[in-house]
Image (cartoon, rainbow, N blue to C red; front, side, top):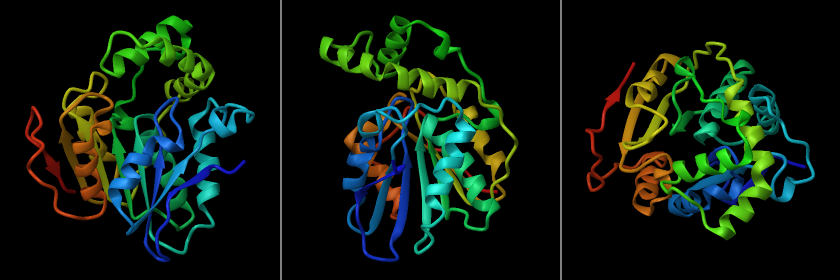
Length: 256
């Protein structure tokens, strides 16, 4: 089954934004962002195998293999400028997809990474090796709660094989040291328990193009906040961002 889902159509030639979900996530995770972007941007969501309408497809626990499949799916889409946005695991996948697209002369116009440390700072806690209860506890922690509801737990248990596979893909990844040529922007929640500001800022070393770091209020899933979604949408569409969403730390930027 195809890897791409259309979340918002747009007129021919409009910017095409390809969104890569977090571990255990799905294409529809980006519906709120697609709505905030408005009609001038086409939004495609990547659907990983082993979940939702791809439940019957085999899981892929190798990040570089996943990136190869996604890059191949994007190969024919050369009729409009393309940008990549990836949250958490999706950010690392976006980096690998961007490198593959650049290698064949069709690199993205921009790579946006969210809540993901730079590949050169890659480290992990062996989550994919934990038992089911420990993985559920980790999901609750990242969501900003200590527990999940009974209904949420039942749903998450159905997705646990996919979550574990995605964590395996992330935690067995080794950085080949790509240096992209496209601009890179990193978004980070100022209370993210997994990624520090320095780890996000280190993305600057993975591109020869411009780099910027944007801090927004919140934790690892800061982007689910409607105010943050609006700020991200303004950034992605090239509009000036407001100063109405102060973070706990100053917003920092760096160009190279």
